Structures are given as C-alpha cells and as structure tokens.
Image (cartoon, rainbow over all chains, first blue to last red; front, side):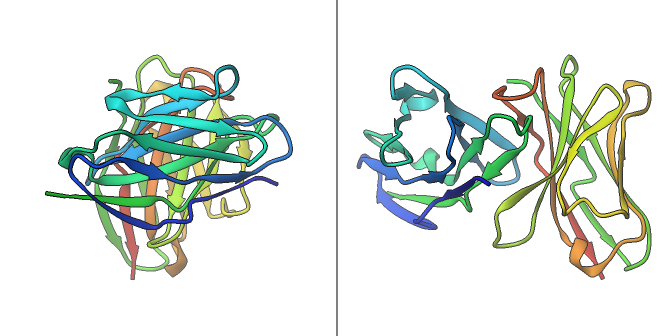
Length: 114
Length: 114
C-alpha cells in the first residue's frame, strides 16, 4: 500500500519570504509524484510532477520540488512567495501498477501575510 | 488550461433519496475519475472509468454508487439511496491517458445528506 504524509497542515509566511512545504511518501517502488494547488471554489491545478531524471523539477509560477528516494520525500519550494500563492497545496502519489488511482496527502493550507 | 465542470456546485438531499452528480470532462480525455473528500480529511479515490467501463474502484465505492457516461455526455456519479456518511465534497477528474498522466480536476460538488 502507498501513502502520503504532509506534516504541516497550516503554514503562514510573509510575502517575499521563502517557502517549503514538506511531503513524505511511503511506497516501495518508483512513484509518480505531483503537487497540486487548490484555490477557493476552484478545482485542483497541477503545479509540477516527477517520475524520473533530475530530482529537482520546475513547475509553474516559480515553484520547484525536490525528490529524494533515500528520504522518501518530495518537498515543494518557492524562493519568494506572493499573496496570490495563498491556497491549499496537495502532495499526490500515483503508484505503478495501480492504474491511475491517486493517493493524496491531507493538504497544507498556505497563508501569505502582507 | 483545460477545464472540468461539475454540476451542481452544492446539493442538499434527504437521506434515502437518490442524487446524481454531473461532470463535464475535458473534451478529448479518455479516463474519468471520482474522488471523495470528507471535511477535514484526505481526498480519497472512488473509481476510474474508461471506454464505458469501471476499471478500478475503492472500498469507498459502495454498492449504492454507480457511474456512467452515456453517449459521451456527462460523466455521472449516482448514489441511490444516499446515507448520512455520503456527505462530502465529490471531485471529478479526467485525463488523456492513465498512469502518470496529469489529471484535471473540477471544482467539486458539495453534497449534504440530512
């Protein structure tokens, strides 16, 4: 079985500060990993995804994530956040052999303060 | 980007009644999904659907649940009869292909069963 853990349910950072949202996964094989963002009253939108290659993957709006097989992690980072980044961020895993079933973390609600 | 629409956005229904949740997926996508999120909990996979058939379903996909997409119209999730524990936000998603492909999500239907 596979699972995703996001240890920080709520994160508050000041505008212009750097951000890291943590994600740990549990899966014995090689997963597809995603970060999605959800703005109020909207569907989830893909920020970035990783399967293989360079462990640092670039996404939209200046986000990037780093995969670590040894740590079973896929942390999301941004160098300088903007107030419009306030949203809920989900770390998501797709395990090989399970078709397209996605396993979600609980999400991290990011608030960017002025 | 591609949009998935869900109708209605909110639904309040009495326990025991039938409800149909409608999803308008991205037009050229072949795979369709439903996910369920109970307030404060993780989003969980319910079912995926391809070529007119359920490919995979989770233990949350009870016998009272059914999905269909007649003649390329809406992809629907029907619950008959509803139970109190069916109260949740239901998200529809679609993707061009299956494993590892990006799933595009709708904004969700908030279902309240009284």
